[in-house]
Amino acid sequence: MERERIDDGQTSSPLLLRVKSEIGSDGDGERQNGSSSASSATAAVVLSTLVAVSGSYVFGSAVGYSSPAESGIMDDLGLSLAEYSVFGSILTIGAMLGAVMSGKLADFKGRRVTMGFSEIFCIIGWLAIVLSKSAWWLDIGRLSLGYGIGLLSYVVPVYIAEITPKNLRGAFTTVVTWRILALIGIIRCLLQFLGLFFIPESPRWLAKIGRWVDCEAALQCLRGKSANISEEAAEIRDYTETLQRLSEARIVDLFQQQYAHSLIVGVGLMVLQQFGGVNGIAYYASSIFISAGFSGSIGTIAMVVIQVPMTMLGVVLMDISGRRPLLMVSAAGTCLAGFLVGLSFLLQDHQIWKEFTPVMALVGVLVFSGSFSLGMGGIPWVIMSEIFPINVKGLAGSLVTVINWLGSWIISYAFNFLMNWSSKGTFFIFGSVCGLTVLFVAKLVPETKGRTLEEIQASMNPFSAER
Image (tube, rainbow, N blue to C red; front, side, top):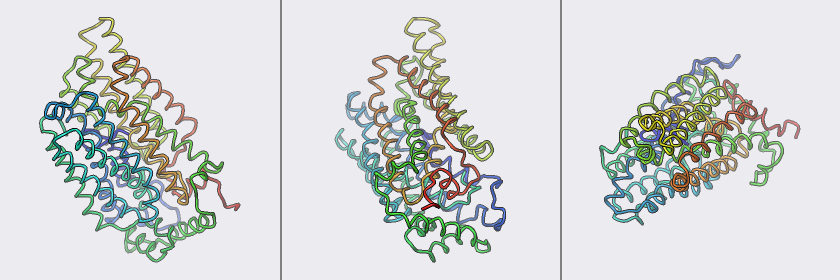
């Protein structure tokens, strides 16, 4: 999941990319016979999405923390490389635990409560890291932080998808100490936690639990006092009532034929996103640059510089080009970058063009980071929040999120061992997976631009009108 790793998050990620696209769309998907104000970005929608997307910064600062903090923590606490690898990767273990609970918790307690609950664990985690004197407390803090962002990684894109109109969905460096970075992480958690008191609950979740009056009130708040919400409210009511006639979903129900397409797309995008190597690069960027003969600090700063404009470009393009073309361009860029870094290590091993190989590795990593920020970082999460019907969204979202974090753990833990095995082979593998992603998107991923959640889900999951 990269997302703007060092600052905005592995995220600019899933979360920041989505919110900005929601606020900045040109509105070409507006309802034909509804009020235009019902499809505009009202103050309530803007505030709600900004508060929710604060989770992107929480998420990003947590994931990107291990790269700029690596040398400081290892020197101050005397950690070995193996111990630091545990610290870096244990975040994903906590995230998997959070992901297992995320869907059920969000369905049972609501989207806002789940976001607030996650921030409590994030704050505890950061405090443990700030105050740690040994590897043990570092790992406990990192595990708690992981649990919190595991909840956030599911509930934030889902909340945003559910509150916005269809046409609007669409730098940390080693100059500060690792303890200061952790304190900055706490501030970001507090900002989102306090903001949750000023935003409405998801109308679709309120409809799901039968609170129709509250559903319409929340929808009116989000669309504006003068907006005509009758058509959208009726659509949500009809769709929700159809789903409620089905029995409550169990995990085995996800594997029925009517959900097969959604599940393949959701799981496939997350597996390909992770096994393309993003977390290995994000967690250990400094050591990659050093291995290639380049300055770790300069390389890390350059990554931040390239990620920000590329993320902004992705925001602009998402509702112009659509999800699929942007995903394919993004994946093709990471494919090229993987092979470029692999080639630099190959030439380095054979003592060829020694003066150029460090620059080649830097360019490759920057192209990877920029291409990933353009689409592969955020769009899989956007699509995941759109393709599952609300009766299975909790279970499906948990499953997809767990798989994402499992892949993240595998790559982040194994990365140093893979690099010791073969630096060039590691990046050639990553490049091949990214190439496979282009084919997967072209063949299986639907375009969701300009369509309501109900339209998307009905086309992919033909549950029932017939039932």
